[in-house]
Length: 239
Length: 287
Image 1 (cartoon, each protein chain N blue to C red):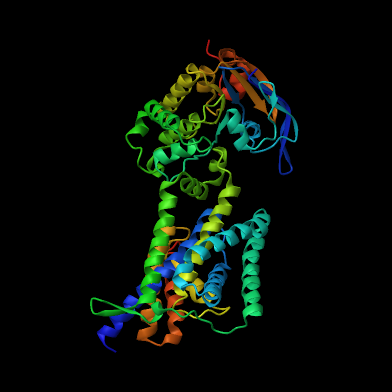
Image 2 (image 1 turned 90 degrees about the vertical axis):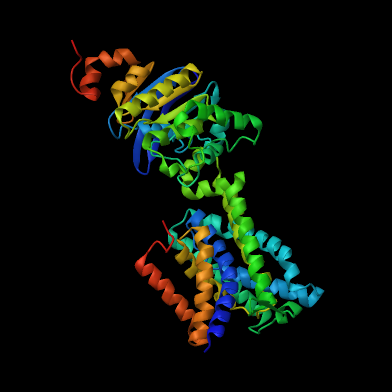
């Protein structure tokens, strides 16, 4: 496993949000984390990304313990996090936002080449690189956030609800991009509300409930599992 | 009261307004990046004026030439203040933050009072008595240099914020701290830098006005109160608006005082301040 979360407990104020959670992601996989509101999906990503150090348990990247490291240290190891809410810098231009994505890298021709490569990946952004990010649509902001994350050459990309609030066609486009990233060798762990779509693109998935893993399995299996459909996807499996 | 006197006072107001603009940018920088009001800001300027005075009195250095010295010393003072006073209270309640800079004001002001007594002091410079005639209007050489110097310092700071990687990171941090953190932009070092830059601006302003203004332990108020009004006018935390606000406030301050009574000029500044907040709580150019 590239990323191994073992028996992690984490607390928000007085609330135990993660209660002994164990999740694994192999290199090159897309793994989805599903579950109802309050199940601890976002908290799991925050714990891995260094925003909420676990109270107990281990988080390993390959064989190295990374639990409790600061976000900046995790970035240098290749753990990159795109948060749920919009996190573009609105008053910076698209290009400046991308430059901030490469903040921890020393300025170099390689960084410039990487920025051009990301702009090539998202043509919608390329033509507007000198415009402020505040003028972007929700889908374009997501693309910018993912593009910014790619500048750090993530080993593991943590995406918290990448399609939240997006129109279905735009959500499809984001998922296409995620598949492209995987094809290019990026490992993805993502939280999704849109379970049906998430299961279609992911290799494996975990369903959380009350801070623990309830069900895990291959995406396609879960998609046709009666129990999962009833609880999280609404309605029974098609016959 | 002739038109010429009024025009003369407008020019003089713009000169003072340029300095207020620089001071307002210094206040606005910390406000914009850290959501923190530095009530002690005028005291840094006052200490810079004392530094200039003693460099002149002790070593005979022309006041205007002390700019690089006061900038560097005040930069260091700002970093030191951040590390020793501000960083510990950042995680505390908002009242702790407000009281910490208010406490600094009291400490810096009355340390100066204790050491220098509340006497007026002024460096003597040929610049103060020189007069430049611009389109029929007379401008004091000292004020003109202070205006030009403030504009240069402000422009340099803006260029730093706009074009350097560190400047962009400071703006990113101001806009979204958590998002910045997720990209490895560590706030601590940048906050220290912001404090250094902010107080360095006070250092520059202090040296620039020293050739034509008295220094005493209370002189900070002459700058800080109009600067707050300029910040409000420019939109809270908007460093570019702060400069425009500074020019407007400078004219209100000087021209208003000339047209009515000098004693009410700060009251006029506050009338504008309250009026703006009443009509546009986010500031005239606020977003």
